[in-house]
Image (cartoon, rainbow, N blue to C red; front, side):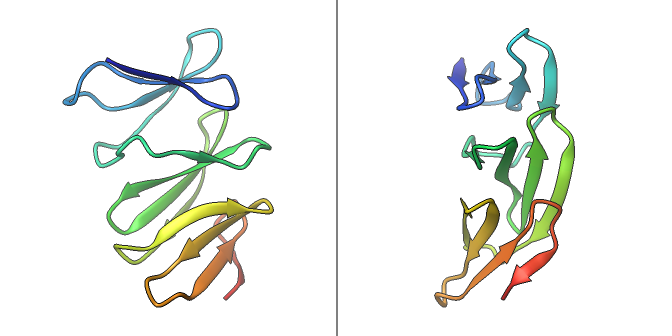
Length: 108
C-alpha cells in the first residue's frame, strides 16, 4: 500500500501497483480517482490546485475538491511545475510555456 499526505493535508493512496491512485479529503471522502497512467508525481501550487501527468501527452490540473480545471497538451518528455501560481511546462529544447490553472496560455 502506498499512502502519502499532501501539503493540503489530503491523502494520496493506492492499494497496490495494479490499483489507481485516489485522492481523499481529511474526512476520508473520495475526491478524485487518478487515471491509470498517473505515476504518483503530484505537485501543488500552495493555493488549492494540483498538477500531474495524466497520460504521456497531457497534464491535468485539479482543484483540492477534485474538480478538473484543465487538460494541457504537452510533448512526451516535457517537465512541469508550478511557478508563481502558473503551470510551467519545460520542453527539452529549453523553451517554456506558462498556463493559468484553467489551461489558457499566458506566456510562450
